[in-house]
Length: 178
Image (cartoon, rainbow, N blue to C red):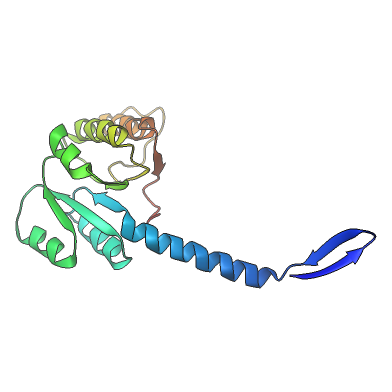
């Protein structure tokens, strides 16, 4: 800061670039410390969407819990990458409670198939109980408010359930953790 006085008023010329660099450095340090202190749950972590998400989050320094259905070769790979693997069923509220223990945020993905609405309702309830800060919801497709097809209506119900949780929910195209 460089100061001058004119008509009894202090004026300061601010080196904006230096301030921005300092603010960015502080924010980067905070993000790095947040990444190591918080855990993100990835559901469907052995699948085609969840598996690369786990890797991406781990590569960016996050702690990751990976919820999977079967303890198989894919689970071993997730463990080797550094994820805390939890075997459970998204349609069982106690499995979801176990998976969300000590988790701050979640990446929710469930196949676009039977059980999706139930899994979302269970997940939303547990997310509310656990007071998750953020959810990335990948288990929906684009739908219109006045949709007539069952799958479009289900997608609207899923979006509403996640929004009712009371935590911040990113649309599926954003990746806020990285």
